[in-house]
Length: 116
Image (tube, rainbow, N blue to C red):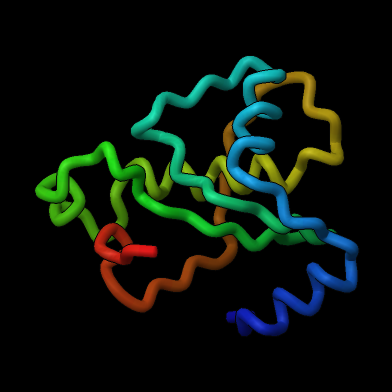
């Protein structure tokens, strides 16, 4: 499992510039992907060469009771997949795709209950 600092170093070496939420969702809109408020959990994204580092948050519009029902709320998992799409922005995507595999996920606590 890669260490967080190692990932940050590789992304910095690759010239990955952090992209803010507004920029990411505007880019998604350009390829006709519309996410409502309950599915806008991607706060920022720093793309690297073969990986990305994203800041995710469950949207404030979700009821707390629904957050406690999951180890990782579905909207948070969707935000992680959105991050993978944003990491590929340099490919000039012209069609929608669905990621088929995930190489690494590391959790340290119930992700739905982490507050930034």
